[in-house]
Image 1 (tube, rainbow, N blue to C red):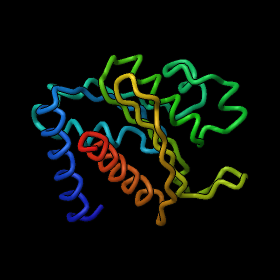
Image 2: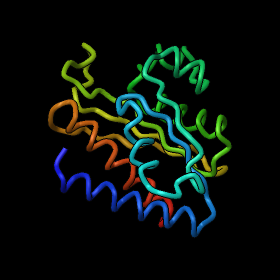
Image 3: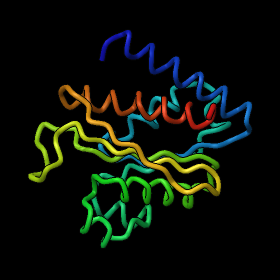
Length: 166
């Protein structure tokens, strides 16, 4: 990861932290393809315990089901990398942590796809705020495994900031 990318991500985390503190909101995350990278950059900021409640790395379908209550039927029907699963992961994380804001990430970082029409770089984001219905966003990132994961973390931070500045 380049120095510029690290600086950009740190700047986004600081902006997000300021918004969460000023709005008296809390955040939890559910990650799959990013493997905890989002939680790591969030907790790199001193004082993150004031607004970051925690995260779940639900890499397997079983973890998505057991830890985030994503129905196995949903995973079987749509696949782990899908809009419904991303939304369900966000809802499950909100329930697990009682946060005011949650974000979930599920995707295909590569180097191999999943033998369907889902390409490497496909990432779904689920976001849940308060009592509002969960929303989802879809992106296809270019690059190698680490580049896809870094871009997903960056996009997650942008989506959270957008949600708070609405």
